[in-house]
Length: 409
Image (cartoon, rainbow, N blue to C red; front, side):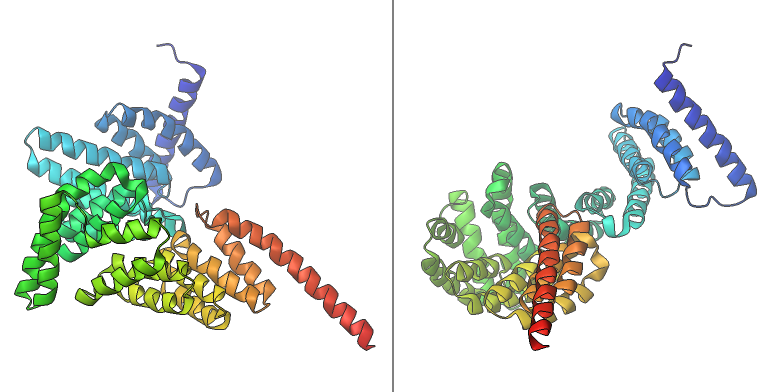
């Protein structure tokens, strides 16, 4: 059979990997992949990727297995195995073989879990979302919900992540949280394409939340959610209180928005969306101290939202609370350090701003440099600019000290 130069190279890589896999199996467990082996694995993956694209799951699995036998930390191959087993399981389910599908979905979850472990601090929202999908296929809704919550932490405005999280909140019986996320989707302009789907489900979720609150003896919150269910169910989204608030925010009527939000939270204080919107409205109205208090209330409800931890710290810095912000940033960083660089980036950036205000430029530079290394879409580029700024400020500071010493002498 005729082989192109590229295909021959890929086949040769696969053969080399298979030979090495045999030697490793005979002599013991596979060690970490060496740089040269990683290059061979990358080349071999090209062939496996073709099978993934063609949905030839069995062939893809065979190729990918040969890669991870030699290079167990090869992330694309691990992810590819998760994808292949997920696809294989769906095909088995469509063919009526639930037992076989269950095995495949379990294998998919294992491989997606290995991706997360291998990536460590470089883990991304999509990695958690993949694992969540595998759990959901096994009807492990609580486990799937937990993974989507981790994904939301890294991608708080990803419409797909948010929608799936809302659905799983509801599936796992957390109906008030489902309502909150559906409302968040409806509020985001970026999620306009998901608005219709969210509106079809929010009335039901609010109705279930009302029943849940009534059984728990929370009559005031039960009435709130029942009213919300009626509004969304009867008017397809209609003119709810939050719709009016959003209108005032867009029009720049922040004081009017604050007034409405205070009334809304008076009826039901445990509303993360309304509390976060209040914090933003107060900040926009120039009421920074009140805004920080509202952010604190929000973070009591959503303590893992590192994006808003960063926002609150930045508001503190801008309102002259740099010393307090510096201390709280250090505590927040320690609390969330296990979540990886992407999650920590907002905290690191604001921590750097606080340190700059207290003229600790070298330490600020280190925080900005760590933030830049995260690759965070929103903060990395600005952090790199701040690193250069800290270098300039340190040079200026040194020059001023030198001049003061000369004058003193």
